[in-house]
Length: 446
Length: 157
Ligand code: FES
Ligand SMILES: [Fe+2]
Image (cartoon, rainbow over all chains, first blue to last red; front, side):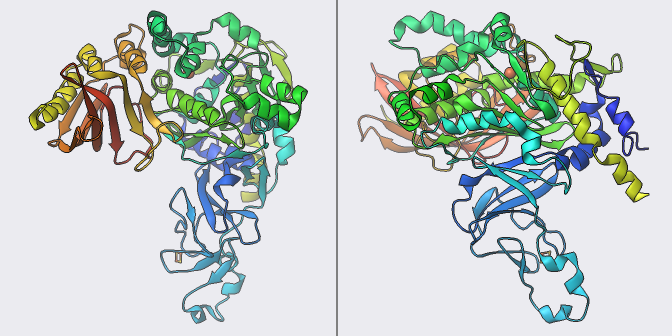
């Protein structure tokens, strides 16, 4: 029996603001509806334009559970296509990235498609003559996704035909992506390597929530960052300077007061960030020559503004997080109600010293890798939660920290940095995009 | 050093890990030694190409001390591990700058609670002699599926 399908009230009731029902993390029907509703209704990140430098270059990705690919056509445009042969559904591209040449060729019966998706040729075409094939959707080739936006090189897609425009959906939250790109003296980001991939046996939303959970580092990461600090205290007399590694680990042990003061900013549609007026990224050593390059590119005042904006984690609802100061983007890819693949990418800042890229890569392997001791701490918590939530002793997850009675849901606001406000903000958006068009869809089907 | 000394060193090093004699293991590293797990096929650069691990003695010490911590929740229960190794191949014996190079094929197993994960690949050792004893200048682990998404790897291959 469907409990939630076509029942937008039942879905809305799962989100009380100061609490959410555990079904959002453990219920398979809810997960299926996320794939059918939430992901298609939202703008989803699928990759970066620099991964598609040459004609014929392609990348593959997923929107929810739907395979897509993006390719660079000979007209210079990027096209996003459903990664599925119009004949019998075979995935056309199977690798994360590559170059297909002038056309895609399906490996099953050799139908071929131009890199904008249109049908190029079918072997033994005369078998379709006079059969009515021309009126089939298949005759158009691979289905193209119309709603594509490339913003500072980041490629976002909305599968649903109707919905919020890219600008409406993200609004002012785009300022974090702006800041990350502007940290390049040329204003451009580049992907030049593969991401670190890390498999999590937990619901994807636990990972997203954790990005703005400022009350966990000093507790859950005492084992990793705390040990790093204590080993360093003991050993530091043997060193002439503080290694980059220590600069990256140590701020994780910052006290509650630090995070309280640093603040959290929420935006409409579930976006938000930690580290408004300070962050764990603020005290990294200057990189030789970088400041000068920035001042040359932007002028003194603007350069200081850009480098002074040290936002911690920015959530782009529903499932990516951007860390401007170290140029990292984490993609939380849902594979099942209790299975999430995390891909963490490091951007290279065009025209900036290599040392910055080195730091981004180091941060990524320290924090986001399956071999990361910080990652081990976090994954342990997610997995325990995924199991613990099956208890019937309490069906609700508590999100009441710094909650106020008439909390506005669609607003821009800066709040105390230990608030669970951004987690609530995500769930307001979750509710909105889960039920958007749902009742109409059911009526249409009836 | 003769050939057997080098080969024994590689086996004995793995034994310190399997037996969790962490202080003995760390002591096998040269003061500038590194432990490296690349993330790319035939990777050449540990700094400007992404790696799973590239750690000096300070960072390895942090890992080892973390394993023993009272509040290391991901180690409740504690992981165990096992190295199954082919006979190490000696690639060079001190010809370039006194560095001995060996390459060894392995299957590594690590537990996490009731789970058991298995990894395969090659470990490369660059060893130098200091005061008559061998030390690790570089230990490099190339997994056959370095690009796959793993769950936790908490001990040391
Ligand atoms: S399935 Fe693609 S050509 Fe038949
Ligand atoms: Fe964490």
